Amino acid sequence: MKFKHLALLLVFVFIPIRAIYSLPNILLLVAEDLSPRIEPYGDEIAQTPNLSKLARQSTLFTNAFTTAGVCAPSRAALITGQHQISFGGQHMRTSTSPLGKYFALPAEHVKGFPELLREEGYFTFTDSKLDYQFSGIRSGSGPFSLWDIENAEDTGWRQRQAQQPFFGLINFFETHESGVMRPSGLPHSATHLATQLARLKLVAPQVTDPESVTLPPYYPDIDSVRSDLARHYDNIALMDARVGNILSALEEDGLLENTVIIWTADHGDGLPRAKRELFDSGLKVPFLMRIPCKGIRDCGSKTDDRMVSFVDIAPTLLSLAQAPIPLWLHGVNFLQSAREYVFASRDRIDEVEDRQRAVRNKRFKFIRSWRAEVPGGHELAYRDNIDMVRDWRRLYQEKQLNQVQSNWFEAPGARQLYDLAKDPFETINVINDANYSAITDEMEQALSNFLERVGDTSVISEEQMRENFLCENEVCKTPNPQIQWKNGKAHLSSEMGASVGYQIQNSEHWALYQTPIELPNFKYKAIRYGFEESETLLARRPSPTD
Picture 1: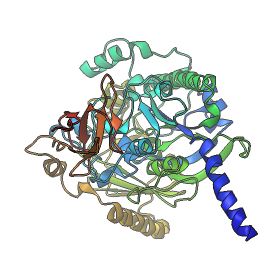
Picture 2: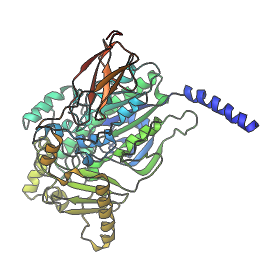
Picture 3: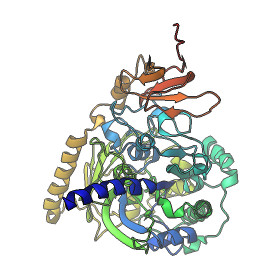
């Protein structure tokens, strides 16, 4: 009897005690186009004092990988927790496809994890960069249901309600590939000129000596390579300063000790033979994670070498927020489990067709290509604005390079295997070495199992896939949501399970509909990912005489 009374007491005591502890805030800081090229990862050229300070309080993951070497497909996987190939988000980029605009089409039940956090009471915000493949590049072009606030300042958490937990995703354009392009002088093309003009306020001070940079073996040692790489380092320093400002603001607001902070990048370096590729230079990213101690956790710096994929971020953050973990997620909570393999994809890159799939474990990388004749160093209008690309290609055409420097311009073949322990720069394809035959079979089988498990929409052409996604050659429109009034409250729903939102009078923002609304009038609409929004409708509560 005493034990029964004790159990009841514990129940009644536990509930209110648990309730006074707020859920953790979560801040996801995403640099653009950046490999682990910072001081905490041992880079002696990078000037990143703020990230070094963050790293001293964080777990530093040494084997974190994106699902693509280019932004839009990678971000599609990040925001959904699903591999982009499973829902048509693999081609770069859907909203500007050479075939004409279309949107990737996740299954009706799939929601971005920020929306799932909103359902749990989180305030969510991001800045002007979306690029999820079922959105355009900029804010205002994607599902309104994901974010309470888009185009927010770096301190967007200040717009939430008092004591409301928040999730913020902040992007850092400072390190984007466009910043490697020469910021002044005669432009190479119209897009180069547009980039020079767009980045006028983002030109980093020249602090890196080009002669000090260390070149990987696949780059020729020429002036433009050194200058462009030095400029990349200058942009990293600029990004680091902004990170410092954000962390300082968080601390000033008294939020640092209740905020989980992840700092990473959307894929590898914005440099040739890195961005867009399935080599580690295109997929391996820095990943710092700071979880507040709260008196029970060792806050010292740690290193973790487990394999982490970008699709693991969604289930991990949902778990930290004590939110339900949907079964349709492709990733795992990387704080609780370790994976053996990570997977990645490369498909159409701007105007160039391709299809490659990769699998990696801690030692080996296997790449399968369906377009074995397409080299990584093909001409590409946007990338060719970088001086070092054109100079490097010219040297190849003039036969002034060694074989390692030439490989990027030559057909890769249908299959590639790299022993990363012996060849960390992935310059020696050992696919035909009999000593690796068992490894080849293992990796190829792992890749085949993965593709069968998640599905691959590239089994058909992009043209056919696009046609399947569209309605009479236009992006489909979400059907209008339904409304029913019961006991003076509005009940909203969607016939296809679309996300429904409402806007109260004199508000600029859309709330996510979850429970019946007791308001005399408001606006409401719906969005199914991959469709355009429904019409915006006006709700008016019926009078008792109606």
